[in-house]
Image (cartoon, rainbow, N blue to C red; front, side):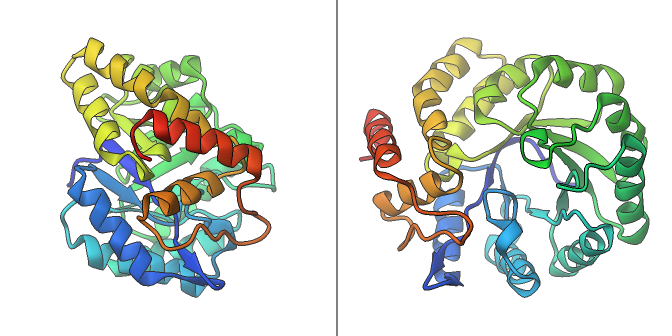
Length: 293
């Protein structure tokens, strides 16, 4: 099995004129790999998975796997708030050759902890592919508790979790309750380095869309126990991490990539809208601070 550790980018999905920009996606993937990124997630929240139709969703994963061609792990976002839809997307990701899937806590429905356990269990029973759970209560409303994570971690296909609660106490509880081989990935850039210090293995990152090399270096330093270097990079990127959410994501990340010339358009799909003037001023300032402009 591949190593799902280090800096893993939650890829934006480039768009032009209302459609997925496939060449833009290919170019972005090549930039990421050339910069030393450790893995890629297509069709996560940052990839606007909620507004991609099924055919687009499946195609973005397929194209990502084809372009990566085994150079880094691909963890395909296949979550949904319908268990049957999540199974269909997971089956498609496996067929496309993804190394693992990222499956989010069902949003809007507000399931019980038992409902969460049964949702993920049904997907695992239906499709034989490694799964990374994804807890992001700020978007889904429901918080998957550490006891539920530990319950699911006993399944051989559940290899880890993207924990985006921003709560280091909860992350510590998950590490305490789960098997030693279970992979904890920070779901927030600002907790990536601290999570590594308490036993995490990496991050699924938004800021690494723009700064894959620095985020990879930070994770490598943290993994090697070089706290001073990891902390230095953390603070070098800290303002830019915040800028990624100074306006609803992924508009800032897409605009940043457009300003860098890495994608042709910062277009997002409704109900998301382009970054506003105040957000752009903040983003530009922080990108200049990192030497990106």
